[in-house]
Length: 329
Image: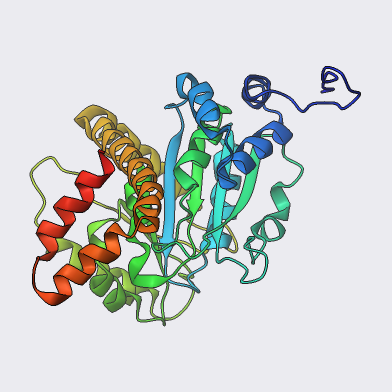
C-alpha cells in the first residue's frame, strides 16, 4: 500500500495505525508484522495501536504450550497447527525464544522449524525474544496476542521458552494451558516440583512410542487424583502423542475444544480473561511507576530514604510510604 507524500517534501510516510489495523484485520501478514514490531519496540504509537485493536479483540482462543526443554514443544506446536488448519481454523503462533545476547532478537528461529506452514496464508508465525523476562514470556506477549486476535485468528498458540519451574506464567495468559511431558526425563517429579500440576488444563505425554511413556501417564494420573477439585470442575485429561508422526494430535485438539466448551458454560472463560486484563493493566501501571521512579531516583529521594533505613531513623515501610507520596507530588 503506497503512502502519501508529507507536506513540503517528497518523503513518503508509512501507513497510519488505523490503516495498519484495517489491513491486519483483512489478513495482510505485513500489517500484522508491523503492528507486532510496534508492540515489541514499545513505540510511541503503542497506545494508539491498542485503542485501535480493542474493539476487534476477544474472539481468539489462546492456547499456551509449555513444558521442560526437550519434550518436543516446537514439533507439537507444528503438529497442532496442521490439525487446527484441517478443521478450517485460522491460526497464529507466538514462539517465545531466548534472547540473543548480541542483538536481543529471537535466537532459535521457530519459523525455520515450522516451514511446512510457511506458504499457508491462514497461518501467522512470529518468533519473539523473551529478552531475559522471567517466566519464559516476553513482556510484549499480551499485546502481541491482541494483534493476532484482532487480525482474525481463531486460535493463537503460545509456545514458551521452556525454562522449567518459572514457566507457569503462561497459564495467566492462556485460556487453555497444554503441558507437555516426555518419558526418560524425570518429568513427573519435575512437574510436581514446578507446580505444573496446578496450571495444566490438558496434559500431553509426547514421544509416546518410547519406553516409559505409560509410566509417565500413570504417575500423572496418580498426582492429578491427589488434587483437591470442586464438584463440576474441569478434570484435566492426559493424552499420549507422537508429534513427529501426528499420532494423537487430533485428540489433543478435541480436548482443547472440550475445555473451551466447559469454560464457556461454567463462566471460567470470562473469569480468566478478566484476570488477564487485570494483570495487563497492572503491568502497564507498574511500568509507568518505574519510569517515574527513575525521576525520583534522579532527585536522590530514594538514596536519602535508604540511608535513613540503614541508620535506623526510619523503617522500610515508612520509607516506602514516603516514596509513594513523592509520586503524587
